[in-house]
Length: 75
Image 1 (tube, rainbow, N blue to C red):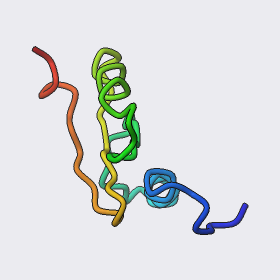
Image 2: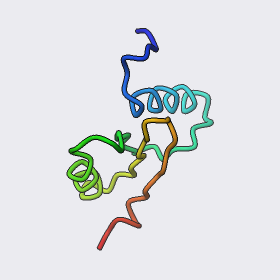
Image 3: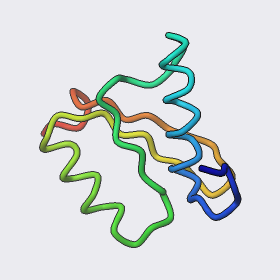
Image 4: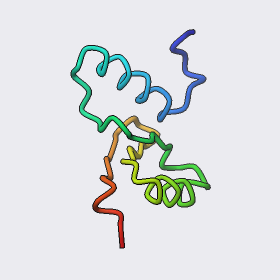
């Protein structure tokens, strides 16, 4: 599998997170869902992940991330 530009920003960050997790150095929660912040369906995907109690890593087009923890998403 190549690490080309054809992958979305979220897919690239998730791949990096997997590699870091193998090395026990991942900064992301184990149950994180990686989402592209600019996708039109991101709102629904955030709601679904929150309902499932999963952390969310929003990834912007520039590769920057913001992690939302499930306990902060409950209302």
